[in-house]
Length: 43
Image (cartoon, rainbow, N blue to C red):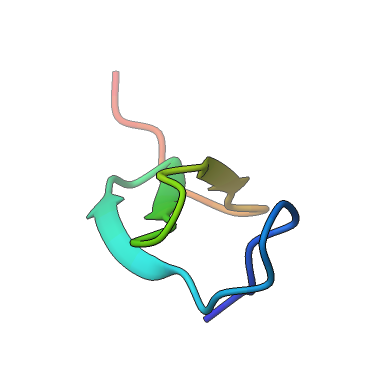
């Protein structure tokens, strides 16, 4: 898990989709989105 850029607290896993993973800080509620480099596209 990443650490928060604002307060240094360990962030928690908030949500995950096929394209990205979202983390949120339990202390200051800063949200960080990590885009995945590979994901499957269905048309």
